[in-house]
Length: 261
Image (cartoon, rainbow, N blue to C red; front, top):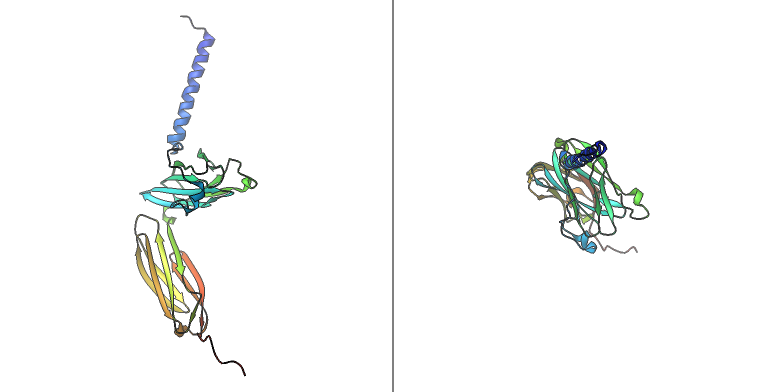
């Protein structure tokens, strides 16, 4: 069968385009370390997302060596968490959902761009090889302040990354005959135990305690209010680069007293 020269050229051009499309898809999904969006996740009740175990308090969780999961809640008109910090040389799987309207989760400078439907969980996996800051934007119109909906993914050097959280529970007021208890809770989101030191200053009283934190560890510092005396006293608790501070008031505890004559 005789094929015209122009037909041969068109056939060759078509084959080149097909090969080009296949190469582009392969590079986008493998070469850049980005997996296709997975729609196999369970659906959620949009009205209960704020109480969900992962999406109620979203953030980054370490699940393996250099492997992390980032849970993100997209809602009018913000992302929670608004800033996501992960280390370099890591593989991160993003899980994104919404409690209100349709949004998108688009990582500027990459081909990560997924629609976020209320109650459905979109997931995608990205490999981050070097420190860099990525913008996150919403490409689905979601209302009046759609243009303000943005976030950030910060890829930081491995030696600058940690998942330590510090919270402190302390009274605002005590009487002179009571004790002041300042309870510092250190949470460690890494798989490897955290060895650190908790230091505290309560009204000038100095404390220091070494702790090993697997998941969470609470250290309580106790001061006799009578030793500090009546008045306002500052307290500060420090763990590594994290610090919490506040103030406690010591009163004389005399609620009654004699009336003026």
